[in-house]
Image 1 (cartoon, rainbow, N blue to C red):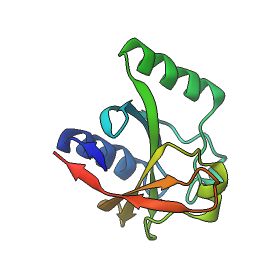
Image 2: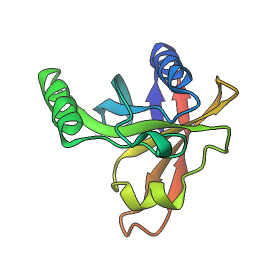
Image 3: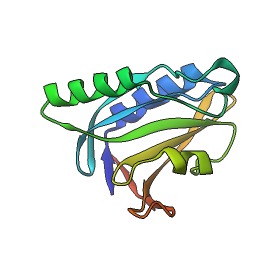
Image 4: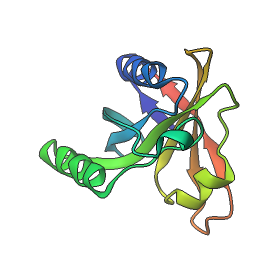
Length: 136
């Protein structure tokens, strides 16, 4: 189970709705099973691919690691949006994912966040398993 405050869900909604019709993304910062903060980031993909792909730069990862360290926390996952399509991981998502991270995918239809689902990639990288999100 992944615990996320209502305030953080609202911050995710704001970021991915502002990114629409492109994918919005960022990092989840916290402790195992509990998101304490998010770090929203710009989508570094080339313009023509942002509608269905996101990319973090090495500098984005460094910024996220430094922020987590400064808070005494860890990077525990990623959030991103799927504009106008189901919030299930794509094959592209699986290829770029890391086991042990939580991946919150938000479905955004016509610019409005519809639902959130969280996924964890199995250690053998074969598939994702859905994890429950507890919004507090």
